[in-house]
Length: 618
Ligand code: ADP
Ligand code: MG
Image (tube, rainbow, N blue to C red):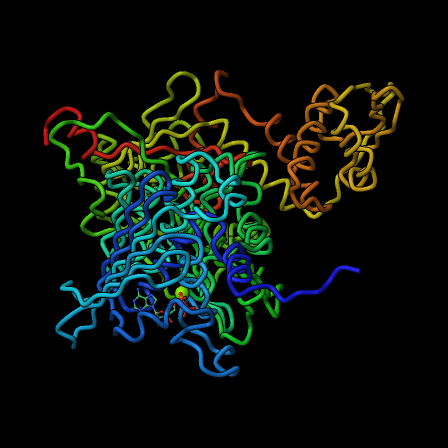
């Protein structure tokens, strides 16, 4: 029988170290968290070889006394937790009192620390967790800790380390997340001597996001600011046209801590429904604040996964908060022209002088939902029935001068000249825009104020039709095909489609297994042309494959996407002038027409100042 032995403290420490410090990134995260907890305003992180040989974190926080500095490296040594009750309401980042013990157990450490009220600082050297040198040193207030040769005494762990570049980028990501969670702290990272991050520490979330995600991504984001019962949600989300092929830029924070949560991801993505292409993901930096008793952050040693008391509220809070922000944001895409030399390019990493001007400012009433098609319909009816404004004599005179027509008799306004709708419109458009024309049989050019707008007629029409179809409560009417359509999707897709045959039935499709991986499509939605059936099913399969939440309403939306796409006027086709005018009118007057159902923008803007800069007038 094997003899039971208690592990030596050294071995126990090594095991514990493995839990807390998996790789340089986790060591850096712990050290930066300590610096933040110590009240630092400026933190510098320097790494060499991905942090494997050298990691230095310097802060200007409260520092430690000589006595505390030694205690800090003992296991379960913490200044942040005294009683079990304290665990309930933890506000600082670290609280397990294990990080320094764990990191020092597997490295060589140099520490210099000084409190403001002491004339001298303390210097310590530790090897494998044991203090081997102690000194009184001259150093600035705050703490500097150098970690060398991480995992030198645990070769098994060392083997798991990836290439330096991979470790370095994990470390930069981890520290960047802390920088975003703490915009009030200026965080700098030097990787092999090169500065890769520098947040200004001005307390503005946008500045930190700008420094971390870069100018381009930050400017394509929309501010979120909303409340949901006792939850507060703030941050930034990307516009539907500025998405990525992965979820790497989805950052969620709960009460200041970075977390991963499937519910939060799902809620975010739900807010983009009908605005994203399959396989595209929005980016976000979202900070959720909620009472401590509604969340348990202590479920995972790395404190990254959290448990929420009420997942449903959480979902709604994020979904509607983001939806409201997207609803208010302009869907117009700023056209990009090559920068002229004279243009003011802010030197990275300096954030723009007034970042808040670049994004939608938080409105008081942030929790209205996207106007549904039904609401829009009701709204449109009210507008139609509203009394028409009467022309005042002055207006009529102005109007006639514009039309260069002799003054008409007082009683009747001029009859319409070209089209019946002109009657309700003042010629130089009472809406404040002018349709210049169409180019390339695809883009409608409109002058509005000092902006030039380009409207993609297909994308616009597609969205209009989609909203119209969706507003109808009628179920999708199926049509039985005389001869079934046979198709052979990818094996996995065919299996997914068959598995979801019942769901597809509600969307008007009937499919069956024809054997040999072939599917027979026997029935399709009546609005769909038979030749589009296979492609539509393919899109549905892609959604299923991408793991999107697919329910009857999502399925229906998907069918309607295709129907709308096929029914819409196409780029390259000739379109009647009146149709173009009607499209423009819809696009410029409705707030729900921003992106086609796949996330392509409908309207692009070129501003007067952009043009002036381009032509060197300004
Ligand atoms: P925890 O952060 O969970 O308390 P650590 O092992 O990370 O445990 O740190 C132990 C203690 O050392 C902290 O509670 C704190 O008092 C002190 N400490 C660590 N780093 C710093 C620092 N950069 N500045 C001041 N005090 C620090
Ligand atoms: Mg700590």
